[in-house]
Image (tube, rainbow, N blue to C red; front, side, top):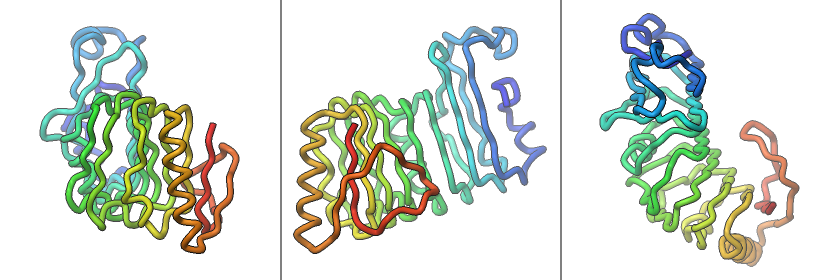
Length: 225
């Protein structure tokens, strides 16, 4: 689907669609989107597709896409991927309250320095991929945050130096992947690994392969690349 089709009247015609992919490329003609890619393209009305379970939004380099202040998603959404989008902490907190969300992939979409996770956020999330080059502080405080998380991948988190302490207490957490991250973050993850080991949890180092649908061991595994 192209941006010209990202309109409420179009979504309403496919209210029962389950899988939606939107690609925003820099080769789209200005007439197709009402201007050039330098102007923000606001994408919204996802909640009009009431049956939507999987949503993927990919924005190529050179294009400027954003979500409006009151962007809403279908309550039944299970998998969400945002790649190259421009989302705020407010947007993340809206996403955090999706009651059925189990997979979230944020690829170069959040550019804030601080992310304080919303209260009671991500209660069912099992897989999180976070690529955030500017993130310096990640506040995860409540016991219910990420309580069902099994797999965490941090990519290009160059400014983040500490793992949130909350992850030490997530009993279901099986794997942590660190790709191109700050050395202090790697050390923090290994410290978490040692604390889990002291509680008789099995630990081993994995290679860089990961997937949100694969069957993995029950022990906590960490890979670094």
